Length: 93
Image 1: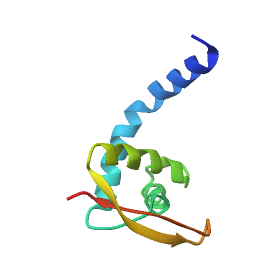
Image 2: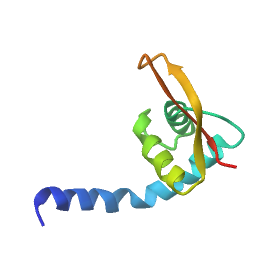
Image 3: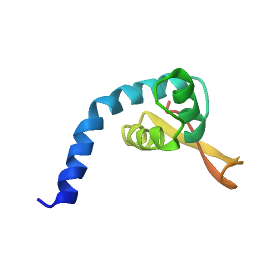
Image 4: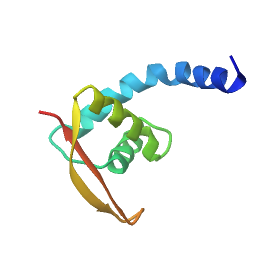
């Protein structure tokens, strides 16, 4: 196994325990709301669940939750930060 594969595997195993807990928190945040990944990331930071604001604390978990059928995209919204339309997420019913 090459170095890149080794470091990738090490990183995966290091964050795996955190990702399950983060998914639970994201589902709690989304309960009854519709939010973008950036808005969820801001809530995670505000709660102290992440050390700083970073959209990628939420986006990969949303992809995982979508694959599990727990969340879905419900539309799009213009983002002032990026100047683009971005997905809006909600709990799947």
